[in-house]
Length: 56
Image (cartoon, rainbow, N blue to C red):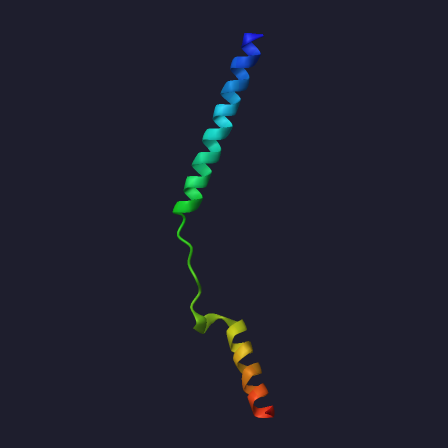
């Protein structure tokens, strides 16, 4: 009876520890953003805006 309880508590502690470690690594990861010059979607939006302005 006590063996199952001890094993269960150890498993819970290991899972909690892994969750804390992965969360802390996720918060320390440095996210980067691509510059606007290399973004094809921005160029597409700009050409669409230019076309809309020419129509008006």
